[in-house]
Image (tube, rainbow, N blue to C red; front, top):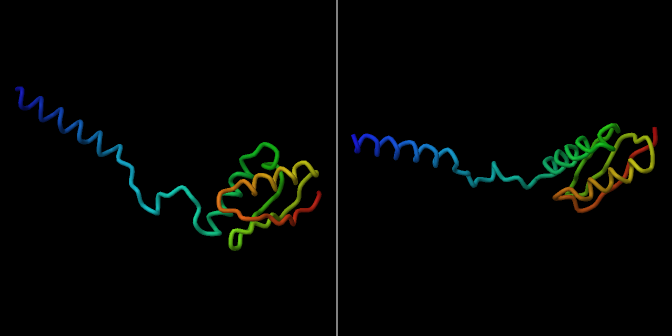
Length: 101
């Protein structure tokens, strides 16, 4: 009985530990590597922001230089969008090609 209980406990502990293992692989890396990934991260940040999420914006990135396109309702929203994109990991500079609605 003790051997069975011990074996069961060991099997459960092993399955819990294996389920909590974090894989260290480039596919699971959270840092953007390519311009496409940087642009996707910048767009996600813009869309999730209360102020810029309502604006019609897109971001293109080439060699780390981000360009913001689209229309904004006012100057404050434009500045907020630039600030968000500048703060995005991997962005080295920002060009503003937005226009007012």
